[in-house]
Amino acid sequence: MILRKLKKKALRIIDEDFKIIDFSFALPYTYVVIEGKKGKSLGVAMTLPEEIQMYSSEIENISVEDFIEKADSLNVIERTLALATINAVSQYYIDLSEAENKDATELLDGSIKKVAVIGNMPPIVRALKDKWFRLYVFERNPKLWDRDTLSDSLEYWLLPEMDAVIVSGTALVNATLDMILERSKKAKLIVLTGPTAQILPEFLEGSGVTHLASMKVLNIENALFKLKLGSFRGFEKETRKYIIEVPQNG
Image 1 (cartoon, rainbow, N blue to C red):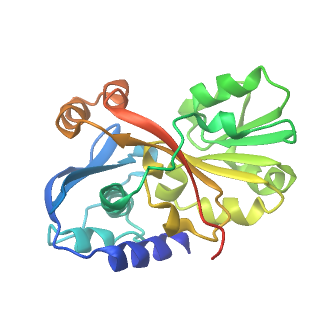
Image 2 (image 1 turned 90 degrees about the horizontal axis):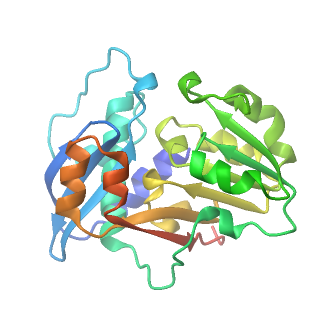
């Protein structure tokens, strides 16, 4: 299971005593800020209100390790906080010297015919609609459906036909990424995208994910202020987009 692998790899990479200096399970993003010898790092994970029921967290100690230990929890609050923490650790260590500053849609070329977008992400869908692809958009949350959106229940059926798959990082939060990768064996390109995809590329080595398309927070204080105001676009203005390849040797 990918979440268990992420947990083990994140705990293994930590080589100093990080301190959590701020965190919140919040809308639109859950966030965790850590501080180490090199300074601060902010990680986020999209909060999925439709997944929340009568949960209460059983996390007792506020530490990086205790948060990460909950990455494979069945409790969505604990899992979301864990992923935000893994992202904070990842962003602390990530090397973006070879990363490209472009959008996920720019990776697709003329050899791609059928494209799945998992999670109705309007900017990506708009960018792909007027091109030559046959586009399939899947979404779990009915509030985000439109007349061109397919239920995520059809992913199991249709993903084996896809040449490329662009997956929202929220597939980590709702624990569907394993199934998506298993059903997308034909795809030449599998891109995990969005703020929730801030993880280190080596954490997904050999998984089938080919690229991460996410964002690096440039101004942590400004980004935090906007996150606390619940500002989606405001937070993203404090970041830089990047695309980085995932090693395929695992």
